[in-house]
Amino acid sequence: MKTVWAITFLAFMFVLGCGRRNAANKGLVADLSSFHGELLAALAKRHWSDGGLESETCILEPETTIWGGYSDVKEPDRWKAFQAGLPALRRDTYDSLWIENERARPVAPTSNGPMKLHVLTKAEDAELDAIARDGRLEDYWGTFRARYGYAPRVGLSAPGFSKDGKQAVIYYQEVGDVLAGAGFLCLLSRKGDRWEIDEVCCVWQA
Image 1: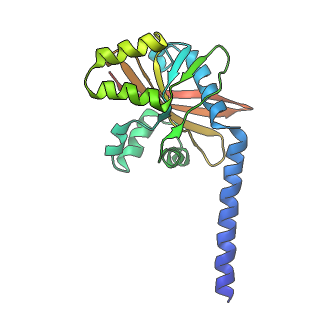
Image 2 (image 1 turned 120 degrees about the vertical axis):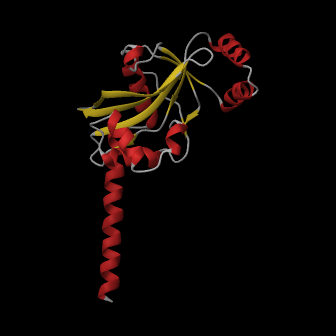
Image 3 (image 1 turned 60 degrees about the vertical axis):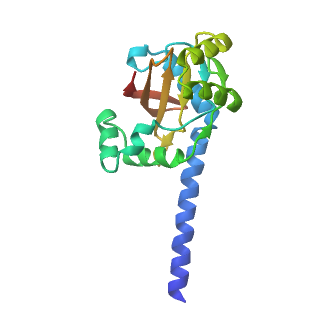
């Protein structure tokens, strides 16, 4: 009987601890929309060659997962690759990123500052992807520009957070005409009531 009570108590404390960590992170990031909005505003202030956004107007993918190239890399090599690009990245932050992105998350960021945002609907995205799968890239971008102008197509993953809520990491990508584009990992730290970008690492470029 004592063994049963001990196991029950340990299980309760584990669940309680997880709940507290999740509640703490939820408090730091009021919602995913505000985090994404804050991130986009910060990226818009950086030069594109330094991992910033090329435009303050963004056409956003409705859902984004982490760049597929990483799915073929096994642990611990994948962790080593992330560390090489983001030396200050903590292991718990890294683990959280993969847990949060086991499935695609809907993206609907709030506009922060001068950012102008348009989120593609799933129907719009599916129509464009169908054109791209047919190999008609000129038709794809012709349709895209006719509808949305010359703003870049941007994708954002869900962020991963450290257990203490002081560090975050996220994947984002920006694609322009034809095959021009790049994907990045962005490391942020909590400064008071705001998130600030510490490091940006390019993981692919075309």
